[in-house]
Image 1 (cartoon, rainbow, N blue to C red):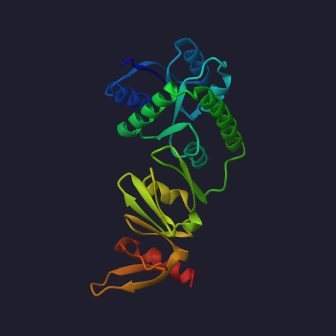
Image 2: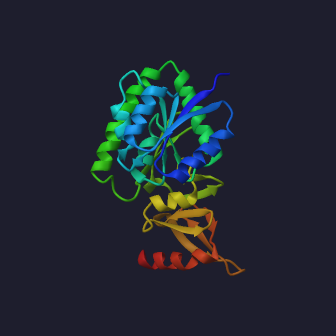
Image 3: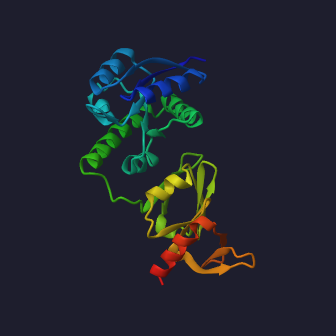
Length: 263
């Protein structure tokens, strides 16, 4: 099996070193170079022709989108964006052919992203992927220049195992449970698994509408029917559909405050 040739674009020395270490342990890949600026990156991509580019969004002399826009039409590597947390970018990536990994980079997540990039490279629809990439880059640039959307998410697009997309409006989500590095969104019509930690999701949604009631559970306040105290002194949240969710002691105060505000 031939190796995928990978180029890293990142202007943070520690992040660059971390990626180099992670790639060293992954099978089927070979690091062919790195760049720390937009100018260096464009030159390196054109000269080295990597199969996959790990591309930081924000660089000292521009953005990763600037780099992609400067590439000639016949140079179209698969791209995996690397980013700290950016609401707008991640929302766009979730509904597109473009992939991303969050910093700090996790080996398993990067390996999954490289696997998907490898599939895109070998797919018959590679030309369509390139066209979609260029459209997405234009949309992302517009979002960055305008300052991005509202600070909180109101909807999510979830990519299934088969690649299909499901739209979930957050005002239809009754509660959220944590499943390791994933969250499960519970709605009246069913549940949906999203590759995101509950901590990261809680930072993306309006804290005036959702409350953390347990380290492994978020609840939409409007879905709460009542709060009951158990014989052991613990408080359970009862949703309108009858679901009972145990609360954690450290979250009880915030829950009481929000319920008083919504009384």
